Image (cartoon, rainbow, N blue to C red; front, side):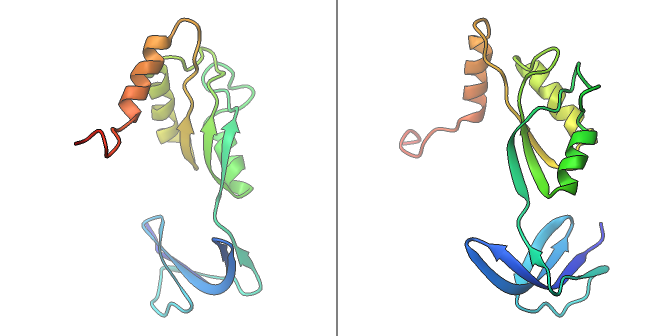
Length: 149
């Protein structure tokens, strides 16, 4: 993966605006500094421009599987990235809905092949899937430091 350096922009981050260069290596920001002198495969001149962190959209409805005529896990993240949204969290209102671990995993697998953005998915709760919801809570909840002894 190519390295990229963004030179001379005004970085907006953590409530501050400051001049800085940004170095991106392996698809991730590796350095932010007033002046980065090392070279990169590609250089972007950001003089006179503002650089902001990517936006997280925590409620999207992309509709894959089952309703891909409305949107899918390739086209909708692509449009999001074009507008500056780098991460999304999708609702479970698909056909079939994501109300089991298996359906949730299918969505993660599909996104890993298609999405240009970072992703996460909500699992839906119904009157009939309390066991799945509780299992999800146990899978993704670590004990607090107090519980670890």
